[in-house]
Image 1: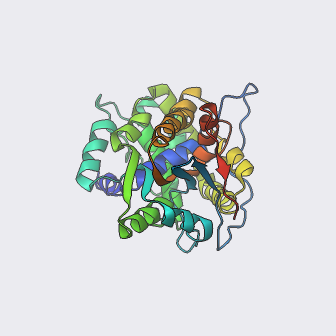
Image 2 (image 1 turned 90 degrees about the vertical axis):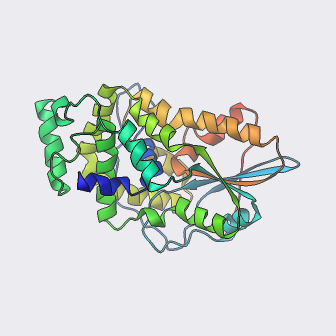
Image 3 (image 1 turned 90 degrees about the horizontal axis):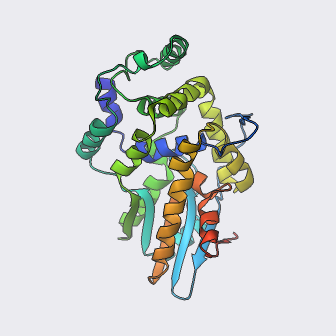
Length: 313
């Protein structure tokens, strides 16, 4: 349990979990085919130029910027049009404002720990359990590490470990950097969701869906670093189509896709619509997966007759 308590202290893990999950949640396909999670690693430029969009009327401007929740140190993405738009803004909007450690522990205890007392591994078939235990061993974790938890928590935790081992740090993520800049400039910071809501997205999934999600991550755990490298490369080069294709690779469960991606985009589109009724300039930063694909935030805004334009730079 000591290892698990250390996980609780990583406050920036929550939006990352949702980002990883969204990257693996694709729209249902009639063919039943899924795209591979990872392909041959692409090159990440030292000076990324991620895509930026804007929504505006006569007295309100909202910039839309796709983030990567976890990065390796050293990428200089906060410059040019991105920095200009940020500096122009009076308000930063992110998926979630990080809570205090004690609050995060309480939330995880409430939602991630299985109250039935049934071990996670006892919920798996013999074949699933063998593969799960092999994956845990490959991560140098005791096979019983996540036994007290619900399947979704084991799944997203396992996804994070190989990335951390590959040199990624949550402290280098885009949200952390933007929040630090916002505090330095005395900007207002707003969260679209609460920690309880974000954990609740997973916690409310049916258990059989959680187990399928876990099994998928077990099968693809070794591909996670290469998949992340490709995601960051596409993000860095503003390759929106390729990013959408990669983000849509993975699970086919409609309930997961709707819960973690399309449903949240619809909620955020309503937030943007309401915010446009008030004057001011806003920098809205959400996971890059939400700004790519057929059910992206931009597409949801179009349904509300709100024009979204790409910022060229």
